[in-house]
Length: 371
Image (cartoon, rainbow, N blue to C red; front, side, top):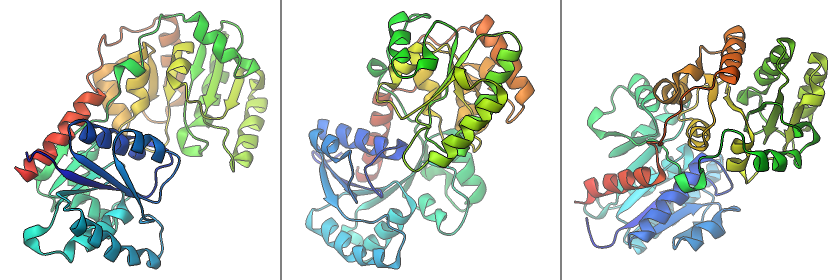
């Protein structure tokens, strides 16, 4: 690989989310290895963190769904020429189209290499097909690779690279099975979390797709079966989601568990939240591409219970099969929850999906192209 690469990553914005996190992690790895990392996006609250890693940011709103966004093609093309870019790495659909159009106008001899990462299980369409157009197509799980091959059969298999997302083990240290200080901290977040009753945790933003309704039904079933449990939903309470929260609160009241449930804003101390819990839930109604919650919770030493589809099912089947439940089988979910609460399973001692492994594998993909 050349002594110093210049890699441009394209995405809509740098506010929050898994795509944004992966972008920062690869930018950090590039800068640490002596390469030049440039991120093109509309900006956001993560820009200072990006800059602190030694990377650069170019503000360009390439994720806004409007025909006016096409005006950025020329600007991006000029950037690629001016900075002598070696690789363009697109992580979202509209930025990928802008990137493709920018590359198309460059001489073939000096055109940067083209990489895409499929972060989600998007509905198949000609619009989504651009994510399978890379000289290398990074898939964040086997489920994503299978999705690409099923819906875009013209994609050459040899271009696909499965690189699971990873975590920094130091950020999710193993916690004792009963972490009293973490639970005491949780109690300061909401009155319902006080005490030492088993705590179920479902982290996720305030959207119906995260399965909050399934979690409420589960806690009601556990209480009816004689289990004195609590439920914490960090991230459910968000600005603009007031009507949804009111609906969930009404459902909790109808089920008779309103005093056992905590709907709170997102927390930056998610590892501490895992440590405070007894059982972590991953009940997304829509299959997820990877399911980072699973490896984060297991790294901390907490069992996971989730619907066995998409990346979540893939991870549970290999790391903790006792927690995998056929999607939307509420009766089986309750049965498995009771088993996991009374007989905690043996969890992996080490987590194979690490941040370092993900970073090294991605830089190896870049090396394949430029060597």
